[in-house]
Length: 226
Image 1 (cartoon, rainbow, N blue to C red):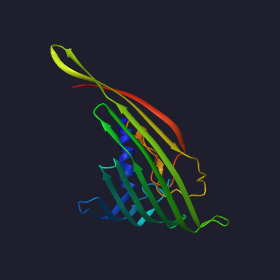
Image 2: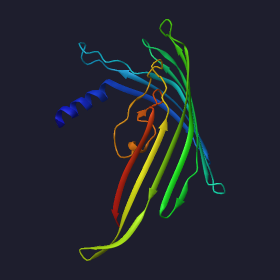
Image 3: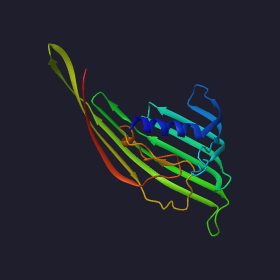
Image 4: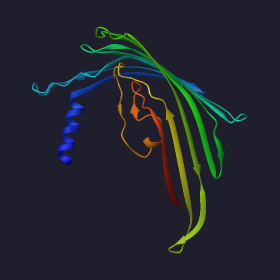
């Protein structure tokens, strides 16, 4: 199994060769920006099984920021992204994403509660669409999350060593309403890997072409020996 996995991984790395240029600017304050272009050289080692070329990014502009107010116990974050996707044989277009969020974290040594609300707005300008399919598509989705953790501690002793044992129950709630996204092309989205960190995220998809609807609660309990 490991040899088969390694050979497939090597084959994948050899068939899509990225060519990337990235410039970043971070003045050390509350915001940052970046610019990148990404192209691929697609190799075809087996003519019987042709490999599709992924979308080129030409270019992508990112602007993000985070502001915190200790006086009002609020945190404001902002994401803006413009991406132009190009392809020789598929639908092309530009995607603009604007995603502001505001949270009101309450932090105490034994309790952390973080309610957060945001608006995820996306606009597409598409080329080479099929007849009857719109060339401009917009999607606006509100997001609501509530993250709460309790922290309990007790002294304990194991093998003549003193420890502090913690018990940390955590609840994470996320609500995102349903939107029909069937007419939106998939440029860079896919199902994210399932892991411990991913269950505390709003969206189970990577990228911005797909946003899941959600009305779910995640419950976790963690214990530590310090």
